[in-house]
Image 1 (cartoon, helix red, strand yellow):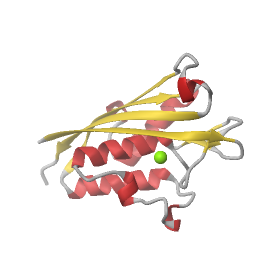
Image 2 (cartoon, protein in one colour):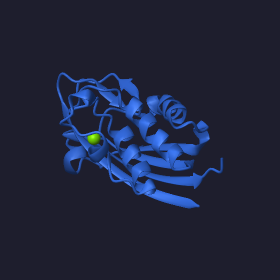
Image 3 (spheres, helix red, strand yellow):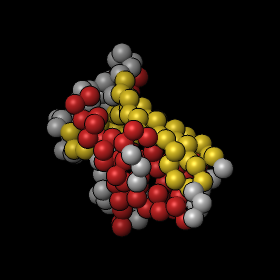
Length: 160
Ligand code: MG
């Protein structure tokens, strides 16, 4: 059995918040606003996994009205989603992700993001791909108003 899921997320860039993407804190004058640490990449990845499992979205499982998730490290939520996948008998086959940001330059942090995601997902880093693109100044990402991320995940059944 093989399943595919898609995820998308976007968060607003504001002053006075840390910029955390893919579990990595990135030095920048702005950070992402949100109830949790607002890790846009991990959120899109979690939605892709939940999508592949046919289990709704992160808003259903980790509502932003719940104080338990205020400021939470999204890596912990990603691990929870992987535990759900494991219970359903699935493991990550591969995951491909695209971060859409005009600034800052993300390439220096990509390998660290890959390593962190692969640890949280329990798969080798070569199963995880992360890309970054600008929008040539167009739209909310291009105007530095926010950062978006897209993820596609394939899950393969594990026979225990
Ligand atoms: Mg989000």
